[in-house]
Length: 181
Image (tube, rainbow, N blue to C red):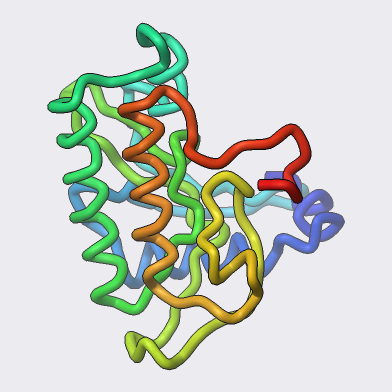
């Protein structure tokens, strides 16, 4: 990642948080991509993750008939993501970006959650909330859209939207203008 772009996009803290979460809290999880290391030179920052050969879930869906999965395949994918989410939530981490583009599938068929740029360490106390609204509109939980504060359960909403998409071939909430979603 070019350092100048990270500064321009005000994404330095996102990348730092992603690195810290992956190294400190979730390293060596079966269903979360592993960060093998990081380094930088004068111009770029490098996060080196494990190689997952199968590609993004998004591509698998797009290349499947009617953009759907069989019920048994969808259940397998969601079950693995539930385990990944459970591991995160046990540590008070909310991902806030669970969607097909942030899931990779290995050649063995197992999935791994990637892209922790929006992830945040929270308290496991459900009364403690954060108010930052970010993410893909089709996957945003109602409490994020309504800006009333959110916590760990927003990831469960994302999993529900994803399951619907895997089975139906489209997201449950969509509009040409994102604010209409």
